[in-house]
Length: 146
Image (cartoon, rainbow, N blue to C red):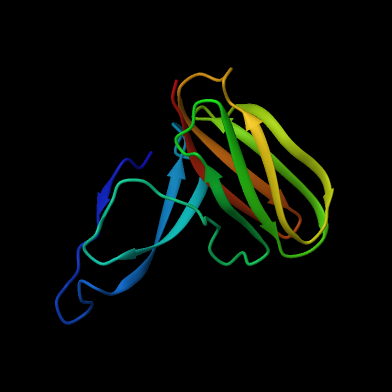
């Protein structure tokens, strides 16, 4: 789990005002990849958390646009975009890879969608939101605090 990392730059390659894409891969305790996150950062800026939009590299079809608030303690709102109309599955996992909630499952139209979900009954900690469609996947990290 990424808590923080430093992005360093080499003079002559990138300056401190340049932005670069950073791709972060998340793994479960058995070293299985459970998600990726992509974020534009300013070179030499410290990244303390990854904020959406988050999507898998090479997947232009599905995006998790935002999780608000993150971290959250009561109701969180998940906004995501589908590039085409088709079946989609939005699911929340704990750090053990266990499903804790299915937020959406079925046909959805192309465009932006939003789901609010009460996380009040879930334990504090880090969770993973996974959006799956026949054409791609997107994942995001969220934290629950009480």
